[in-house]
Length: 196
Image (cartoon, rainbow, N blue to C red):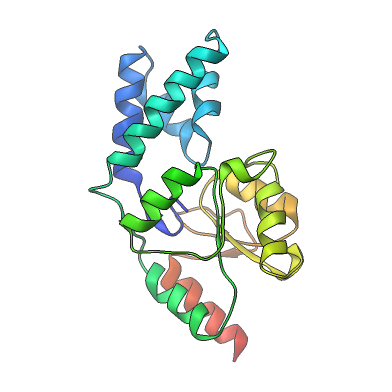
């Protein structure tokens, strides 16, 4: 979702920079780590001394901030065109994210998307980089992972898609995938060429 269909970079970086400063951590270190990861993983990575109750409180505060700071959230280049292209061909598509459902729906809605299939963080036993989300997403689309294309821009997401056995497309400057695309316009053009 974030970085692949929804551009939430400005919001994510603002929220995590503020968190870093409140906790005496170098913001650049947190920003290099947090993309594609669930909030609790990031919190415990940088503050391993916290008890579970403190982690839960910090995660709730971060989630509240992320669900309300939506003014800069927008669709990525080519996002609506790709979704329209898929729907025009009756191709199943969905969102597999490490974001909690509440945050996923808030950001997708802010960017103008309403996927019929959403696999959120609480829907799986293990979030990315584990393959659980992509395996479940493929099944819910009526396919096996090898018949599914996963679009990713983060290290945990790419690892999850590869581990699930999907075909993997990278966007956002990543190059470690089966298909490397500049953006979703590029992906749509390549899919169009492959189907014709």
